[in-house]
Amino acid sequence: MTRARTGILVALLVLVAAVFAFVPAALERHYNTVHPRVHPTPSARAIALHRRLTIVDLHADSLLWARDLDQRSERGHVDVPRLIDGNVAIEAFTVVTKTPRGLNNQRNDDRSDMITALAIVERWPPRTWNSLRERALYQARKLQDTAARSEGRLTILRTRADVAGYLDRRRTQPAITAGLLGLEGAHALEGDLGAVDTLFAAGFRMIAPTHFFDNEWAGSAHGVTKGGLTGRGLALLRRLEERRILLDLAHASPRTIADAVALAQRPVVVSHTGVKGTCDNLRNLSGRKRGRARDPLRGGRGRGRPRGPGLRLGRHRVRPLRRRGPGRAHGRAARGRVLRRGRGQGHGRQRRAPALGRAALSSSRSGEG
Image (cartoon, rainbow, N blue to C red):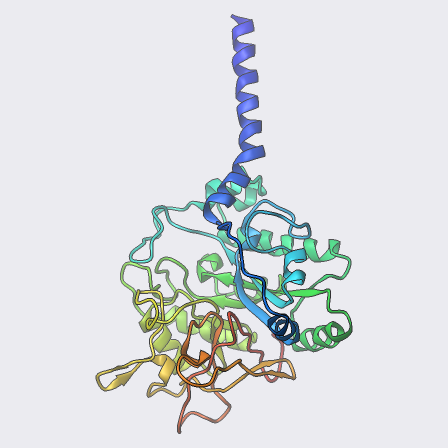
């Protein structure tokens, strides 16, 4: 009997060890898919153009997965060596703290969570198992640890001075990249507006009020009610502006976007999205007129209407690529679209901010972030 119990115990230990050893990688391969394909060889002209660009991508949830981002991997999309190979100047590492079961684009509630099981399988600290805020802080520390081990290849950007210094250094040292911390969903604040200061101290410089479900701050494009900013959401908006943290409207409901654009006193961003003209779904943005009202991307009646023909990285101005004639890049897929409002520019003609390839970044003209 004792021998049988010992055998069962050994079998359980082997099973647990196998789960911890193999399941994290299998989960990333399943959810963070890379489709194998043969890509055409780019022309010398295309390569030369690519090398001249300042490429900024505003969305990668790579910190969610169990691998060392300082090492090249065949899993997922992002690690420091591949960012450098791809000439990516800045990558926004956007932190995910909760996703509901049965995740979909149409309708999700907040009653379930798949990240808890992932945190346990990936051996995150026990304090992260029941705390969304601790999950955000843990992932921030993962990025900081990666930067510390990278021997200068990865810089974490926290201030305008960081951005300016990094871009100056990159002119003579092109084999480097930089990271910006973002948060997908203010539910990680756990209802505490003061937690904004904690996340700021941890390095977060971009925060989205919602992710895949409605919360106490705002409605999600994928939520149940899909409402706008709540009273607490307005307080959050003001707190982010005080801290010079970018408001990210990715995954926000149309009402949340309209409220934020009308009320914001500083630039807001949509870090990753598409446009309804190419894929008409709840997630993507539109530039069409709707009766007498206009979509927020085309400028509404509020003081915070979007404006701005370019992007600013610290004191560096980045202009978007444009194509002439039909199909010009100005209205195409908008990953990293930036909505800007100039100081004292509450009225008058407004323009839609163009996209910069797959991504763009807006930095404040004064203060941190």
